Length: 359
Image (spheres, rainbow, N blue to C red):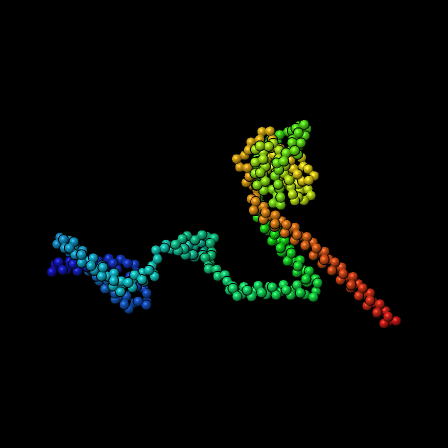
């Protein structure tokens, strides 16, 4: 009889450990929705735990021995409690009403603020974490209809009977293209590397004359075409300077005055000396007396061959677009002058007719 009594006590103690230590008990007692069933259940648990506390005082050596043998029964009871529907209900309610996040109450500047999980700054507004509205995404059909509307408007302006409307439409379109090309060309601007300190060699008149004649006689040359100055041109110059003192750079095609810009840029990048600039846009470079071939013959602050060609195409397009804008502006100005002359002639005719009517 004593053994069965102690086993029942251990079972009730295990039951109280599972549920009575759970903080959900207070929530069940407070929630009015679960009040009829929860109060009786809480009262039952309270009676069990109170009986355990009273029974623990009168336990003797025999109960301590029998407690060890009753641990198996308690484990069986705990396993059965896991699959109990009431245990599942309590677990869900605990997850819903109880949070492990820390809650802080701040009263700064007579304003009450609650901080859950993290500390709120004094300058932070409580509405800072408000959700923003989702961006409206157009369907393919709506996009197609919008583009069709733009095309119809453009066609209407092109076919307009008013010449000023047609000219202004072309002018606006050309200006938009010009802005787009300028924005594209900004991507090809390479920041220049800081200039390295080097001592340029001073050549006498006899040396200059000798190097000039030598450069004219020799046939080695580097072509400088529509891509302009890029890394490959400087690389070819260094490869020629491996066996020759001078090298010719032939600029073709070249605008008037552009050959001097090319000469300055190549002298800066290759550290060579400009000997002479011919009328046929040919530049003769001298490598120097103490020339040492660099490890990196193509400077890092230059464009590649493909990028240089792309930049040239954008520059050519920008040049033609600028010329077209100037032409359209002149046409629009001539049209306004024509309208002014026509109005003056019309006013003179009207004045002459009025004078005839008066007479």
